[in-house]
Image (cartoon, rainbow, N blue to C red; front, top):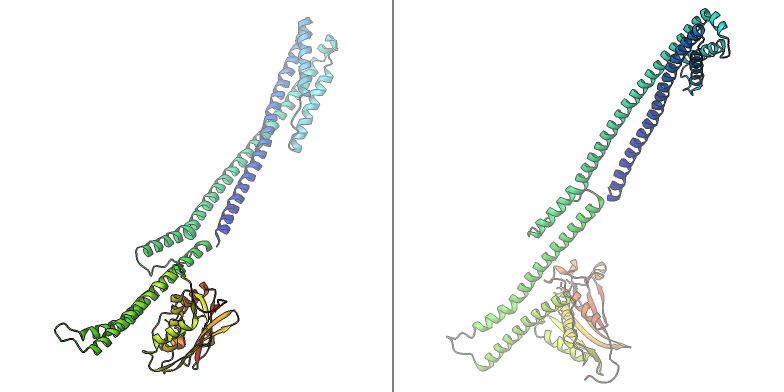
Length: 476
Ligand code: ADP
């Protein structure tokens, strides 16, 4: 799983939860507001009904007093009660909830209107007195209708209250559920973070620590998020590459030690012949021994210089000290260097008549030619001809080294100049580390040239160094 996917899934989950909770709360709040408004209206209406009852009683009482006393203050009080009755009757009401309560509502209204109609304000007090008996019945009926309305409204209020309680309970359940889901979501996200991010990170960190502490086989487990897996894979690849490089470096050291052992053994053997407790050999023999010592010392020196060169090339520092030299001389020197030791091989040299001027660092170019000739000898274990040919072709100087040795398979030829590459067909033939050609190509390229290979497995190879020629006359 990718980090982006995990983050998107967690955000979507929390957003959906928040949306759900918010809609639940909004719905329950809307519903509760409606019910509370309804309750408020019913309370107001209950007040209206009680006011109607109070004013109905007041009207009755004052009507009776007017009939008895005919006093104007009772007439005024009765009219005031009547006005109040009309006012409270017109007070806005909550529409009835059920058909039954609607019936009760209409009946109460009818009764009051009837009461008011049968007690007109302008009515003469005498008539009122005469109708007093009938009026009591109407009052009772009206009162009873108002009481029924009151009871109905109170019942409705109780129902509304119950509904509010239910919604409240429901919103409690919803909020508890949302909190539970939120907690579960957070726990799930934390668990995922621990499983896919924290633990893999700790493992990578532990692997890096172990590697830093010297355990070169430490590798990071490749788990968790894709990005962390990629980091672990990159770390493991880097550790494997470093291990491989270390192995090669140890191989180089072993190979160098092995290669140094031969000239050193020869040196030791020669020096042993000059023991201080013995007389010195004849001059001729002494000279030959000293010459051998010089040659072996030069061999050691060359090997160490090559090694240092490779170290420098690896570090990217290649400083050329250019001078103009005749390519024929360079080729001749190299052939002459190998001629005395390569007794099983016929070293041939083919040079043009005319000088072949070359602007180059002669030590480096000799290093390249040394490598090509040494390889030609090394990889022709059965001996045979090794031919060095110098030629001028247009704007180029070519120095070709051919042998009739083991050759190189076509597939391996492409990789010959890679660092540490050794062709399987020839690597068993002679010791080596696979750095000579790599260094040779770097040097050729630094001179603006290249190295070409043609080879046939079992029949031999030709390595051709091509460098830009120096126009003009003879070598300096
Ligand atoms: P080394 O000889 O130390 O292995 P080089 O870089 O000089 O390293 O050569 C790389 C590889 O190229 C050798 O290991 C060998 O397999 C192959 N090679 C080079 N020169 C020849 C040759 N003349 N004939 C056959 N194989 C060769």
